[in-house]
Length: 335
Length: 271
Image 1 (cartoon, rainbow over the protein chains, first blue to last red):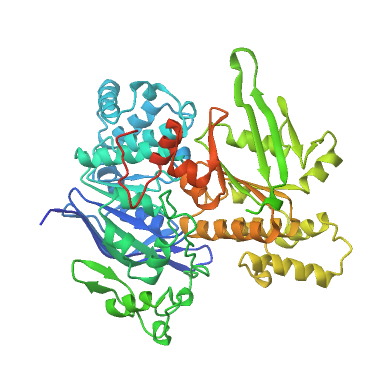
Image 2 (spheres, chains in turn red, brown):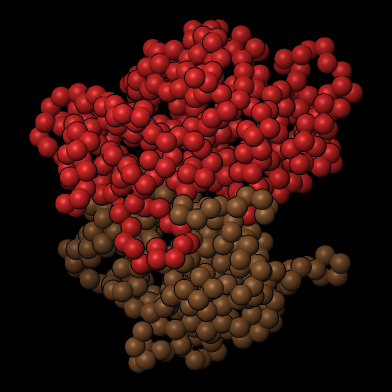
């Protein structure tokens, strides 16, 4: 069995609002990513995908707070570490993060090279400017970015270029695990493809050992990641290989999500999209039992009466539903 | 589509927009001809900077036209005064990309919808009738009027705001709707809902929808015909099936290959 690069056990984190209310945006999430593998996280806006990404780094700042669970990166348990120690010794080298709005992630008053200097100085205070420039040139070159980018201000770069610069800066110290949070959703399809190719190259050449890719675009996840996890209201509702999750989803929510895929392929025009009615629950006081039950057309009275646990299927698949695999398939067959 | 429906709503001939002059000159839209029929959903597809939005703004009358003419229902468009502009905007309305900046943050949702009723000459209707109309518009987009009244637009999610935009259009009943990337800022799940609603609205009111997008997959799904735009010019046009299934231009083929697929292999080597 391949080495596990990232292991998360029952991680729970919460936001504390200014009125003192607890919002559990990540609720008992467990996951494992092996060396050379990538994991996709899908789900609609507000389901906790980005909070999970932030929580995985072990670097919490208000209003996000750690509650329970553990995070192990390449055998190194980082739970409970001092935030400052995390920033100095974990972020950038063991785990790195590509933020969602790369357009605004670069300081407009700094040249790209000075942003790179900041990153490297946080980890190697003794590095000289010349060493950093050499290293940056080499790493940017490998990633297919021209060295001129280093001497430019962010405003001089196009959206796609900015996003690729952000990725290059994030991986400049060759982190073990990379978390990409919607790296391409603000870009047009052509720039998106370049960003995806860059991430895939990083994996294939072994510059990063494992990747977590977050997006709501399922066709993208299907093409980029090995496994896909579907999140709903802070919980994992389905976990499986990319193929299983896209073509044979078990959880009714995952099924609904897969029904909203739009791709330019023959025969898919005019196929009615399966929009899921209703809105996600408010996480301040989530419904008891299954959180999807109020929107689920297969819901039974029992769904909201007791806690729903994750069911395991042979081959490593998991889903969180009251029905057995057989019952689900029968229900889908009957519409 | 039946032949008696083939009435041209909006057309443009030799439409051109030039920004700047001299060495800084940029031709954003370059001698574009377009004819839009009643009840049609037309997509304009191209990558960032191809001139899609500039073309849309000219059709809307938000920016001046450098060269060329626009005809509305066969008559040359005249929007030289504010009054004429307002008259024109009763017939053409738009939904923009960013729902968060589409609303006046100081006016409540009631005011947003009441404005639409007033614009359609409903100023003197009894209050109960107005509320009934607003409730009907909200239910068309799967929103509940009782939950929206007395709220501000920023209290809604992005998907709900975009649906409220469609509710506005439902009340205004323009002849033409220009949707500029209406779904690029909302997630895939709400996107399906928005697209369905746009299509229902077209079926219900017979309006023409101009759908602007960079995602050729969306264009394929919603539209009857597709125009592919590159460097300010239309390089290919035709029915959605003919353009996307049998593209003749390399640019169209590239746009199609840039969208991730699920049944076919997505070739990343062509970047």
